[in-house]
Length: 412
Image 1 (cartoon, rainbow, N blue to C red):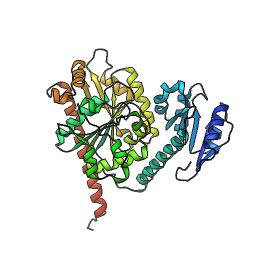
Image 2: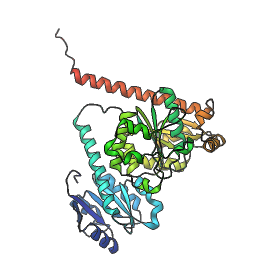
Image 3: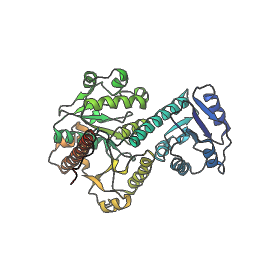
Image 4: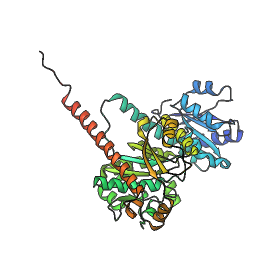
């Protein structure tokens, strides 16, 4: 399982003959993709994987009755394999859970056009990139330079990632008094521009389309400046544009943005796909949002398992507890005990203020700076500044140590 080789080995696991025929037909004359012909059943499943050592496993969602457990087991035992789940259109509602179980991607069946080939190639590119990162990390003792990039994400919908990302970016801008960029990472149905009452045709696709020609002038022309001084990169203006964003191009754009803006906050939403993983790969920390209920706790635990399969260190994730103060809430101490993690920040609940803020396009920290919610965002921003400063100090110490070499002691 070596993603650095030109020829990728593909193992198809299905009992559906129509899927076998469609996959054979689609990949028959595609250079660089070698489809292995192996009959696999529940008993021979793992022995076949061990024998073939595939780069990519195409797994039929309906191969077993408990597909999520199977996906998790494959990714745990064979982390070098990229699992792509073949998902029937009738099971589209399970797409997020498929990725949360550890799959790198999913592909809808029946296959559409060249989507299968495109998906396999994208996943391969991500695997190569991650392998290069891990190789560099293991062969050098230097600290990676902090990017000061933070993504706000939740595996559960409706917990307020856009509200948190927007207000946190404004609070960080105020705390640092430096340029901060807010990126709407929800390429489909992103609402950052709405929350800030920004009327613009600019979006991240304006940079994607010029990925080979990025410079500071172009980046600053596309990023919209809010009246508060915050810089904003809105989501695409159409679904077609959003669906055309490839992880490899997004990665290059993020690199360019990090050269121009010293601090970046990303609204990652709650949909985990290749682009979201690209945002996470490029971030120093994942601000993982949860509510004080059991469903949210369950989803966070599942995400932490996915995070481990992505080789993220546990301290890359910081927990943000949103909408606190309700009577039926699970207590903070109980949450920390269940998740075995400390809560990094808490944000109280005020549904009326939150709703009026969205409807007016005026974030809470601007609308009511003295409200407890605004204070909570200010506290989280200050704690992020501490992390930023600590990371910078450690990086400079390590860099200086490697330049000067080991300290010599004089003999007595």
